[in-house]
Amino acid sequence: MIFFKKRCNKIPKRKKSAFCPQNISTYKFLSRTRVCAYAEKLRPKIYLRKTILHGFDKTRLLYFTFGGYTMSVQRKKYKRKIPITEKGECYIMKKFVSIMLAALLALALLAGCGSKEATTTTTLNGTTAADGNKEVSGTVSTDGSTSMENVIGALGEAFMQNNKNAKFTYNPTGSGSGITAVAEGRCDIGLSSRALKDDEKANGLTETVVALDGIAVIVNPANAVSDLSVENIAKIYTGEITNWKDLGGADAEIVVIGREAGSGTRDGFESITSTKEACKYRQELTSTGDVITTVANNPNAIGYASLAALQDSVKALTVGGVAPSEATVKDGSYVIQRPFVLVTKTGTHLSEVAQKFFDFATSAEANDLISKAGAVPVK
Image (cartoon, rainbow, N blue to C red; front, side):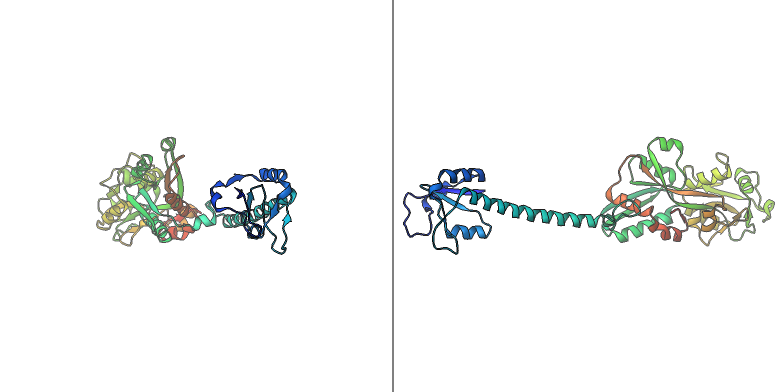
């Protein structure tokens, strides 16, 4: 942009400045094309003055004054006034604009290269390395399976250690309740210790297997029985076998302990043993911990619990001669097993913090944590 102002009527011959203080308010803004037009029209008396050229050298705007109309400036290394033509003025402005455009282009290229370099490394979960290392804040809410307590607890704790401003919550209500909670939008991620049913998937839910878990059949450590077949386990739970002596144990009535309806552990156990809707429970408890405590306190009790939640207070039976362990679950030789599932709403985007937890829990980075919690990672 070029500044113009009207010159005073009279200019002393020896004064360096052609500007008139009284006319400061008469500046007008004109394009370069119009500058050249004016210069052509008033060509006879157009001069450059030293102060103006000096300012141009410092990349400041040129100041032109028109009185008669004349522009007076003087080149730094000459004492005499030098006329300037339309062609010369346009050339100077073109050169100035070209330099500025080149500088801007160089800055843009540098910024683009830096941005590209920061986002070219891709992680396993599909995000960039820079995004993966970025700490997030907010709350991740989970709800569901009590059998997943150890696994989800370990994952949640590690996630909060890596994201100091993030909060992780876990509500152990059971698989059925967790599935309902995520469907109703009461939590970010539901937790289920069984695969989703077809009708649940049809209602807009998606399952992601985060680990595999063996379902251990447990008895009191004082019980002499150490191995049962799947068929005998089914007969115990349906009431066909009611005394331990029929299985090589003491002459005592078998106390059948299980989980409440809607439990993922119960669903998995009954599916594998083909005892759905046929079990005759003495007690139906609401958590894996309650089952373990009850069996530990009753020498005649039998129950089932997540392999990931086993404690020394109970004894896990071998099934068909195979002990429940990470290795036997992984190779499939231990047949009473089920998946640990993260449940989300189909087509609904998780919050930034919930998505980051989900990506972490399903990545190979979580394998050691899952193994230490007693489950079998699937990555």
